[in-house]
Structures are given as C-alpha cells and as structure tokens.
Length: 471
Length: 97
Image (spheres, rainbow over the protein chains, first blue to last red):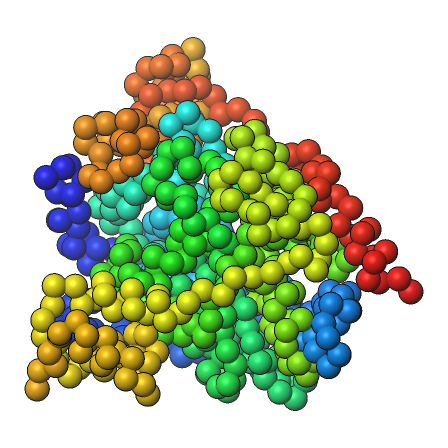
C-alpha cells in the first residue's frame, strides 16, 4: 500500500477531531443506509438563526432582478403564448462575491463557537475566498488548499485569481499541482493544526445555503403573488441543489422544480496533468456534477450532506462557449458584469424559457464576482494559448478541451437534457455493489436517495439485480 | 540573497513521484506532488536553499526558496473578437425601438 492510501486509512480520527461534536458513526444504519434527516437535524440552528447569523456577517438578502432585455429576446424567440420570465438572484453581492459565503458563514460561526482557532478548506472554487472572508470577520485563521498548477507550474487564470482573493482576505494559501492527493494534503494540514474542517459537504455548509432558496421563495411570492415555477442552479458538488431546494421547501415553494446545470467537460480527465489546463471552467462542470450525483459520499467527510439526487428535478448541460456568450450578453444588455462560472445556469435559462408558456417564471439563483482571471476574455486568451480553438458557430460543434464555439446568435443557445433515470440507476449500482441482501430501512433510504419514494423504481432495480430485502 | 522579513514564495514537495496515489493517469504520475506557499522569510537565505517562512496566519513552514513574491500575472486577457459585439448584434436584431 502506498504512502497516501496508508495515511488515508488512519484518517478517521483526524476527521473526527476536525469536525468536533459531529460524530457521523451515530447516523450509520445497516447495511448501506444512514439517517440523513438526523444528520441535517444535528445542526443546532434553524432557518431564522441562519438568516440572523448571515446578516451579521454580510451575507444574504441579495437582490432579485427581472432581466428585462433578455426577457424581450426570449419572447421574440418563442412561439405565440410562450416565453417564460427570467429572474436573476445577484449573489455576487455577498461578502467575497458569491453564494459560497452562505456555506462558509454558518460553518465558521459554528467552528468559532466550538472554540476552534482556525479552519481549513480544500477548494479551488469561490468557497476559498468565502471561507477567508468569513474567517477575517470572525477572527479565525484560515488555510485554503487549492489545486492550481500543472507540472509546468502553469495555472488556469480563474484559479490564480481565486488564490489572490484568498490572500487578499489574509489566508494561508497552498497552491498545489494537479492530483487527487489534494485531499491527502488537506488531512495532513488538519492533523498538524487541529483546525476545523470547513468542508463544503458538512450539514453546516448545506444549511447555510438553505437561506438562498428561502429568500427566493419569499421574495418572489411577495412581488409576484406566486412562487417561481423553476429555479436553475449551477451544479457541481451538489450543495447548491440540495440547499436551494430545502430552502424553497422551507419557504413554502413546494411545487417549484429545481434544475441543475453544468458545463459540459465530458471526455476530459479530472486528474490529468494535460487536461487540467484545457478546461476554461474549474467548477460547475460535469467532471464534478456527474460523479457527485452518483457517488455523493466520495468526499472529504464520512457522509456528504449534499445529496443532489434527492432534490434535483432535471439536469441540463451547456457548453463553455454558451456560458461565455451569456456572460457578455448579461453585461452588454442587462448592465451586469459578472463572472462566467456563475452564469452557467443563465446560459440554460434562456433557451429553456423559450419552451415554456409565458405565464411561467424561472429564477436563475446565482451570479459571482468578476475580475482579472475570472472573465471570458482572460479565460479564452488562456484557452487559445493552450491550443484550444475558439470559433464562432453552432455550439453543437463544441468539443471539450479542443474547440470552444461561441454561438453566432442568441437563438443558437441550447441545452442538453441529461437522462436522470440513468444517473439514478448508476447511483443504485454503486450503492448496491457486492450486496445480496438489504434491510427494509435500506430500501426506504435508497428510495429517498434517488427521489423515487412513490414509485417501484428501486424495487425493480433490486429485483433485476437479485438483491433480497430482508425482514 | 533574500532578506529576512521579505514576502517570499517557497516550494514544497508533498509527495515524491513514487509516493503518489494509486490509479493516477500516466501524465500525472510522472511528476512529484508539489505546492507553493507564500509568507515572510524567517532568516536571510539564497534562492534554491531550504528555508523557513512564517505564513500570513503565523505558521512556520519549511521549503525551498523560490524568491521574493512577484507581481500577480493573471489579467483580463485580450478582447475576444467573437465576444465583443454580442450586445450590438442582439440590439440590432431583437431590441430595435
């Protein structure tokens, strides 16, 4: 066994210490299930507490705008009677410039209350700056561990900007080379420091996002007298979908469908030194989105509180060029210059709106800050340097890592609908691997996990696989 | 010679090539797992020497001195021809008043 695997085998003690008070063992049930509700309920803050905490730390109550010019275009692209209204929640207004501040605020508030001196987060996304910004306010030390460079020390501009932002907020920043050992190195640091593991996937991080869905439900209802029909959310690790949907439910929006949207990077290997710098999106893409749906627990905590398959109603894929297009469109006709990754859901919302009746309403639930590195121009300048072709044309000719196609016209924007049933089956296959018999509790758990409580979807899968239900 | 107290960058080899995780793609496996980190140099040192830094949160870390921290090189890139006139084009086609 290698050094990394050996260390990881001893990691449960480090993990336990770094998540003080949160003993995952007590939620485990045989054979394959755990008590998800109890895990989420173990957070000692309700939605009103979270709103109050976030207000105190410059998070939340972000504005929701009607995208008037985009909506005019949507109407022109739609057949008579069609063309849903698109609203945008401008999450760039949170401290540190993204919705990730919601996740960080509650985790760090709790860490501070437990007496931790510092926090560690493994992230190459906006979450790093969010943790650093919250830590600065709460007088906590922050260490951010990022995957930044290929073996030639070349860094993707968006991640270089995220390193800079973390430093700007006063954090210690580790800029690592490509590799899944990022998790190992984070554990080494947690072990050395005894700091809190500000993982993206604890119940605190997820409860922190519930306010986003909650605010959407309440604000939209107040202004329009009804809840939105759809909320589109960028999907990567599953936290955004999970927290947003739970928050919508808390806010009374029981019928609102949540659709995940990821950037298409299929075919690129996430641990490949070569592929690393041939992608213009560093998160919110299929390289995270798909594996996190089907194997949510392969993460840095024993059980992931972000369980997107429970909450996702549909899953759309868009290309990098379409997101860049939508980012410039948002700036040039709506007067909002925002970062590209945060506009992933917007790119899908435009073509989706043209297919819906005109009385329907879509909320795009995030934006992120923009700046040097986090900008379509810097991303595409870098992509060209790395040998990626950038052309004007039809986005269906997009090839991840090889060709980025900028749509010739707004009418070329489209999205691909992923087959959610296939992803559910894939989840079930992973969960029931090498298992011949499960308990009744396991069955209920699996049905909840794939959101098929009222169908025989899971039973049919188990029958075909020859798995017996005991008791 | 880099002076004590300067804001510097050091390199750390976290894992040698043969210590890396199993099942890595070949193009990744061929390199050690390394990282860079910044902080204040604890005593005068030469570039390429082993040295200690104090990080912005006050931790002491050992690594190989790469030199004083230079400028941030990431920028806004060049205006991308395929993107710059998106607003103009849709305004003419869809938003004429």
